[in-house]
Image (cartoon, rainbow, N blue to C red; front, top):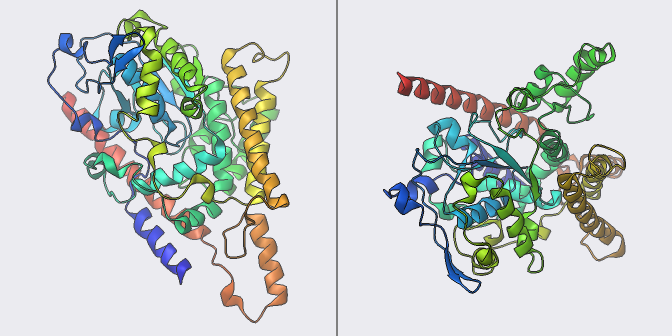
Length: 473
């Protein structure tokens, strides 16, 4: 009965989403708009009280078009932590962030900070060429999977872009998704999303180089476009196309390394190129010992150009800004404000945890290779440091399954596909007369649902494009 109810609830949440992770900013620009003049707006940054003290103030959400900003993208796997980063930027400068989907649907604006999931299928390159540099946000892969689904669940009640735009911000991070709902999604999708996680990191670290997410080899623009559309292209479709239409052409030299059209090195739509100028960890921001240093790293990114540097609060107040946001919890709610279940309550099978470690080790070996182009790059050094820390945390959890320090998944829990098949085969051999107890396979349901969402999303994009064209006439 519980399984049936969970399935009904997932259907209720999922069918009403379009798409599910439009953003976690939407509503902010409308809720806090004001009519400050540019001169007044310049005074809205957090107030430096001297002596290492400060007072947090919300940024100015009505951004004057005449100011020439040096603009920063904060990109990464969808997991909520990008909000932690842009809140720091807002507090340090007094200027607001805007989501990639808001650019796509509401048009261009002069916001200096842009939050993005691109090239993940929950993202879109909606900001055109309105960016000068990018920052890569990296979060623990295990925690990312939990929060990714929680955000999807947060926004799952809205049916259209306008409905999401009108949501009360309290909807976000207000609670955690029911465990049963998460388990349904996890068992069908997490093994593929692990590849998405590493693929997103590769994309940005290599400046938009197009790769196959499963083999990690280079790929063609056509195959790359298919990868960003998993709603209509299953993993089997993607792997089949790569094997038949890409791999042979790589072998004969007709497909060589190439970049996403947005990141063409000869004409990138990000002024400094698509490779990150910094790798930031929101988990470090939460650490009392390392948090202030991470705020300093964010601040130094904004000081890369005087067009943004002129708005920065004094460096003597940076530690106070960190304290106001992290310790005193000023500003918008974040992923760390969710009540209810802990992230550790959302179990993963040993197979899933092992797959996460394998993917992280691949990235560590690639970007930590001695003698490679990455050896002396600060971004690669920081990435490897973070991922090594994450591997240790996941390995500790995996080891806990064997020594009794971690709850072992039970038959009624949702399991990884291999473990689920093994237990199902065992069950069939021992209890062939009771097939009703075997869990239903929801693969077809999730694939059909994802396809429907993609079709609805494409319709919404078309309408937004028509709206933009009409506004230009």
